[in-house]
Image (cartoon, rainbow, N blue to C red; front, side):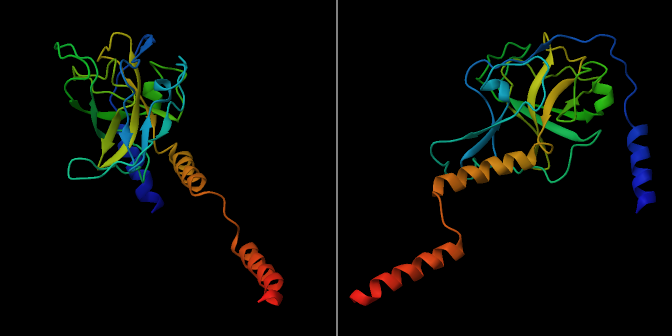
Length: 228
């Protein structure tokens, strides 16, 4: 098993594209219009934190969990995407969707755009964005002319019906020759689940542990029985 893992890791490193970024582009991809996100249950949505709070240029853990006031009715066209079971890996094929700006004249928030890309290694991404940490990852395809752009913030990067990333940033001017940054959903998975579970517990109200509940019932019976 150890040998197999070593061979797989060796292949992954060997397949990383050889490219070098010689400058750090200023960041852009700011929300225009209502925040965008991805549905992960009938009442919870993931989006970029900078869509709902002040934007920080040294982006890290750029993710927020929103709870809808009312639950969404699921149907054949509306259903939640799964949280990832595994971490994103170098070369993972990803499908991005969003309503952001394009260079083809399509008006923002009018037509859902789709593009295919793949994840690159953190070290390669840090050549362009040195401050990046493991809470984020980048996508990049050297020969692609497509990229995320203004208005795509909070949108998903999906793989195998799981949301692997949340659109966070790109180079100013939406230049496709530089990587695009995403929040690593797997890295934030425990936090997401805790937020969702905590909200559900709060909505159902406080409850006594079972031993305490039994004790209360016993005391009630003791006090009330003489009057029956």
